[in-house]
Length: 447
Image (cartoon, rainbow, N blue to C red; front, side, top):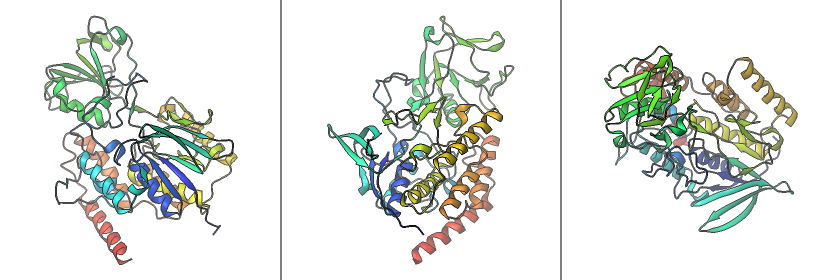
């Protein structure tokens, strides 16, 4: 084994990814500082009623609200799949905890606080400290400029791990004519409760998890909800099963000065609100790499295996860039990989080899017709990706029950979009998961 090197590492962000980074970097022997602009850990899982003054989030000078949680949000993955591998997300039936298999957001927040407490991570976090700039100095060190208690300071580090998340900067649908449309627009980032939509006619754009949840929630108070999506055919104008006031529409053609919204086939409706459930953009306003790392059509690149910019590796890395994944266990593996590489225990390929791998990956996406904006979408191969990293680290591959439960939940969500969180048919897998978790806890207690 090569000699172990200890590095001084800055972690940007104290959410789930940042906590995992701090845990595994310190366990590897590195010195860690976590920069967190809020007063507590949890990142996106810290709920607030506050919203931004610009409801669609296009004003670059607006005060930023980090969290995008709505009040009723529950996980769309079961807790046994969602939890960190070394710290299972088991139900706690004490106090105000939420023991459901698909818990609400507050339970996830409590779980992350438990994780931080279990591994003593909070002592590494500088709270209420916002990073304004990260850059590489002439000496090769990484400089971090930050503000704490209205005082601006700079500090040098050997390495930086970026864990600031990607569910804060809204992506907005392009709608011809919307600048002259007199109605109101809002992005789901600023959605909290359904009451502001009472008796309104709402056009909701999107078809993923937040769109499914929010459309059904606002239907309870809205006059009409029209769900517009590219996944709906031009001929589709059906009501949503089980709802008398929710329609499935093709994507909007235009918004008009008279307050109407036009759809294909000449169909129009008068609408009060356009609600964009259209996802988010990667955004690193603090990061200055002199153009080496860019965000182009939501592709962060070039990144080797979604983590390392080849020419800056391993001294700059990113955790949590992929989406359409079970995030926490993937964060865990990425952080173990980063920590081992920084210490010299694990090797990376040469810069040239990494760049060649990145280019081959991009070429494969293009040949398959995958849009650039889906570069980090790991649908269908997240576990192959995770297992590749696990092998690099010398760790076991993903448990089979975790893979099977994830797959079963995906199928159940499509079959039962209204009640998949309450009804499922994978009890045998859940039993297997908890046997494995119990064995893991027993082994941990024995040591």
